[in-house]
Length: 302
Image (tube, rainbow, N blue to C red; front, top):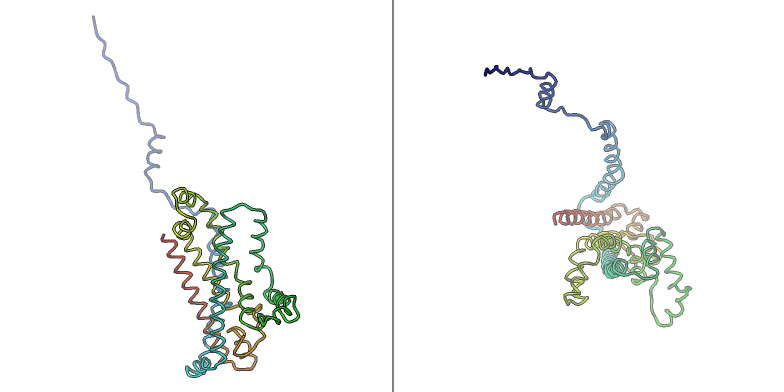
């Protein structure tokens, strides 16, 4: 029996396969994203946004501080030595503190009711909360005058009982509360809707009371949104002009807030004093802005 040798055929490597392997080893080239805007368009939009902010916000603020210190530090601080200026600052702080406190309570209650319960008129309540955003503050002031003024619906009864609302602190507080009460509620409602009611239900099922559930479960979950709403409410309350102007009566040293006092000084050509008080109001707004940024940073870290 004879054996025949077996020959093994050698196959040359395919040219196409080698090319494919070489292409896979090459470094990928950087390609531009077809979805990105062209560079001129991006820089143009950014330049317009920055230019708008500088022209309408930064430059007016710098001008306020520049005019306030135009005649030196002595003239600047002399503006705050006026008894009318001190009374305006004190009234502004008092009205702001009361308004923010009331809106804090109302905002939490309204957000809790809207997000945790289903009831008739829920959509109407949300609409009413947004009403100050669409109604002019001057109209709001006129509404309170028609209600509580001497010729208003409740005016005669208030006069009989020696209760003064219009042209006094209560009227200023009411007007300020009206224009600022959406801020706290509007910050809390979206967050509380997103969180749902699972945490509260778990706390109640474990035997915690409703009050303890609120302070130990709900409040810690919404604390940053609550503080953010309080800051916005505070900034709006300090700078309110229209509604307060209608109900205050412009009584020097009694019912003039800082914005009203600035208007009077400017109309009387006391420009340095007007800009000095305006710089204090702008400084308080800047402090609020810094606090807002810090809150946002802290909330993002958590």
